[in-house]
Image (tube, rainbow, N blue to C red; front, side, top):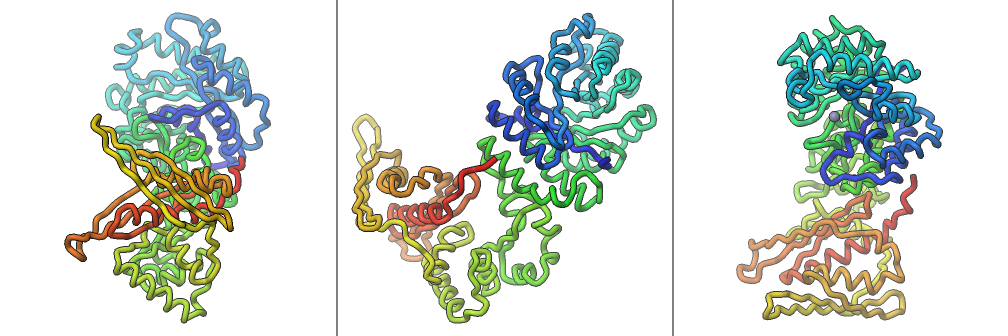
Length: 525
Ligand SMILES: [Zn+2]
């Protein structure tokens, strides 16, 4: 038995995030992934009130889960009706899930103003709903909505709602910080009071509106709760839920809480990226533990420190959570950064002093001309590969032409034509776009798409232009940074020129070459 049970609600509470929507297929994929990862409970949705969720429970009942208990979510019975006649209660039982979680009101203010029923009726609703589900042989959780706010307003009544569930043999009482406004020290003091009165296993469900959801969850574990609820990447309504991608490594690596094996923990980064890909949201590079930049180091002394002993600048070893150490190339850094960075790409510069000096010299010249490789790891890798002779150019430019036309009606049309060679084939393509870069991007893809279908899997995600005026006065130099993604990995490329279109072209070509160089396998499950 684990010390603490992990309860994921990405598919239910997480899906409440603005702009996020999971198809049935998406939900099944995530469920299987969470099961493989070792999540103890996965809340799948509301079978009673949402037809899409009903289909999901249908499909999920045909899957054998190895580690996960699937949970159906609903609310306590409606007022003034018996639980056995409540449609939603019946749907919970019919869902086939062996565990159900029902949410009920703990805050007298909500009972009186939202439900408009008597405080006693609310207690009956909680008790009778739990009893009904227990009688059906289910494991039952009671989610006490707004519990911490409720306790502040009327502690006596708030506790009565938990007691109503406990007296009906509920398996778990989960205290919810539904509005996310409670601070960690308040969570602790309320929990201490609850522990005195309620003698069933307790869980915590925190929202992040005060940016404290993870901290509150950890404090709750220290105070004795044995279930943590949260979502992958902290997805959820408004500011999100407690982020399990932080809660879990904190529990395992820092608090020595037995909830997941080290072996499974090493799949955390993969899980985080998988869920963001299915959610069609770009992964947050700066997310603790699992972000691309979570173990990225910049600056000379700092990076040589990391190289000799990672503990000097890293709070945990990146491989423990399945992440990688990365070295960011910058003007500030010297040889040690370069050696480390090349090593990441599989090149040994340590023993090749001549090449090292050569690359350093090139970088210095390029930086002087306005290049900057910190956000352009793609262009940097191409530079190093060229030096080692392992860069394979996929296509070669003969010429490009961009035409812009502004019409009387205010419309601006851009058209680009590229002439490109792939092997000994000469390819010509013309495309329109909403600007010169967009038109060029489309024209290149059109020209080489048939030779390199992988180009269709990569996509420009960001385009930044900066004018560097420090040099020639009137003829200012423009730096273009492009960010590209294949849905999982993101890379940056750079171009610098007095001409913005030329600078964009340079960055664009690097971005596509890099994408083809690292052509990704089809996403697996
Ligand atoms: Zn919630």
